[in-house]
Image (tube, rainbow, N blue to C red; front, side, top):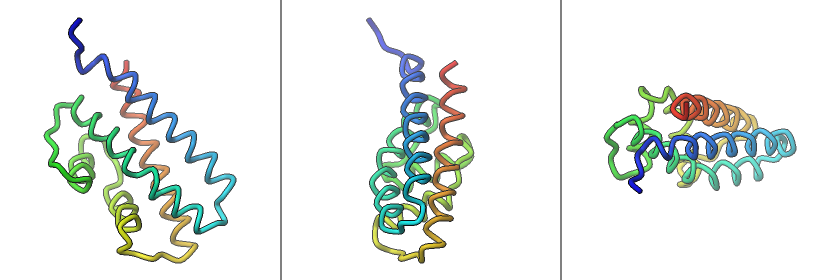
Length: 126
């Protein structure tokens, strides 16, 4: 049997929904811990970008090889917050060291970006 891109749409939508659920619950439990917020964002962003790359593939968008290429390519077709994702990547790469208030703001923006991608994935899955 030959698989098509549309065969993977429900999977992409499910992955986005699961990450969104996980991040929302995590924020409710750990919002006051800068160490935990940092760890959660930096441990999930790469996997999230793999799913974003898959969504872009389903939308027939060409993407370069790096995570930052994925972020840039996703801005227009998926409506994700490019700045938020670059900040999380900067955090992961040790380029920035935000204070606790900024970490909460970053986490909220990251959560919103995952929610945006989940909505796009849901629409593609229909």
